[in-house]
Length: 268
Length: 288
Image (cartoon, rainbow over all chains, first blue to last red; front, side):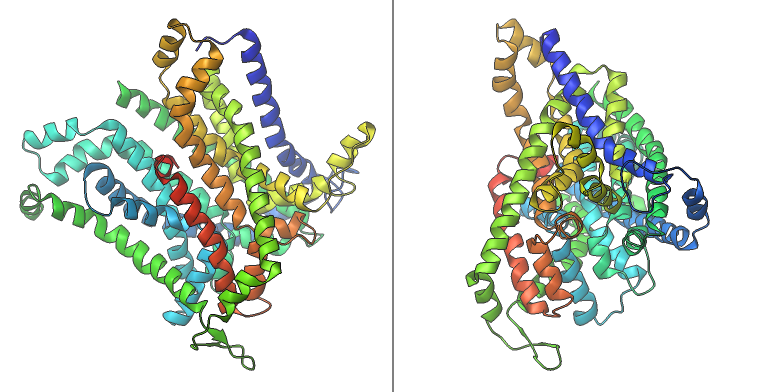
């Protein structure tokens, strides 16, 4: 579109200001991880490295981090399998009840977390008589993670069409061979992106987690919730948050690279 | 080769293929989620034993009637809807120019960096971000400090704080689908529109907007649904403000009245179903 230099400049300024506002609270958290004040008061009265030292030796935080990684990995693995199957069915076939299946996949993320949380808590404990554990937590997380994988896979499958698959079948490859050699390689990066989103979603989830994690299962958000308002721990929480944002750039950048490269080849 | 046999058997049978693909995901979602949700809704029609606090299977419409007639629930529902609507509108208004800039103005290299810049904050814990806003909004926080020379004060903890914080939290979720929507609009169309004499504004309204409407609605679903059920943010930056999520939470926890909690959760479930039904035709559910 032909945009005047003024329009471009205005859009650029709006974007810059928005990004600045997005990072402002994170910047406050960063400063606070070095602040001598234990409550997030502004401006910080002085600077110290004490909290960073404490965070790196906080067994509670490190164990919670480990639990979160395990839960998120397990939940995204289940979501990857189920989301891909559903996306294949909905993008490649016509059948009765398609809309209903689509709604079914979206529902766990669309309904409030607290509704999902108490529904699953009630189902596990009262209906099935199961003790809450890390397993009930993984099942709950996988349920609302399916949608991210499904959406990414569905978009890719719709965009790439069926010509190559038809050709493969015409040339005598079976269904499984065609999936392995034709469909999957083109789908891979969309699955990486969807899987990463699922991981992130599970990693940060607090509400459903509150209702489905067993006693003694402490994920990082649960640990943060328990420690956030304890004066001597609040700055340690800030340190953990800073580490997470910095580390997160790596997987996002990889996913970006992959999807951009793929989108270019698919649309060609 | 058994896989070969299976493949040869399945190849002409498309119905079986669909069944094979759908069995696992539908069984999972059906068994884990739909059954749990249905059971919760049924619980809304049960009651709690006053003495033992146990849920009793004794059919009554008392909870549901209470929720739909008492003024408290009406007030809180309207407040929650107002907050969710305000958050959605703010996020969409901010996201459209940013997403447009990312997709159509920035060069490819800047675009990559911008996408990363928008996505990275999603990894900072939700709780930490809310806590950061609690600090920003506090009496000795950055907003009050920066506003003081201009004679402005922090809005403090209340509805305004909740709307600001929730808009902040969900903004990346709204930017990303709208960005993807703009990205799907081919530059050729924009050039064609310009060649045919349309000015920027006309092209935007007549060509671009119809194409990205599903993406905008997809973004709004995130902001609206995530705000509608929130109770943690309200607890941290909302002062004494209550939203529907708080009422549900109190009744599950402190009040130990699952039937009433289930009855209250009928309200957000109903609202979200109406919302999804209203936007279903636009195809927005596919661009979430």
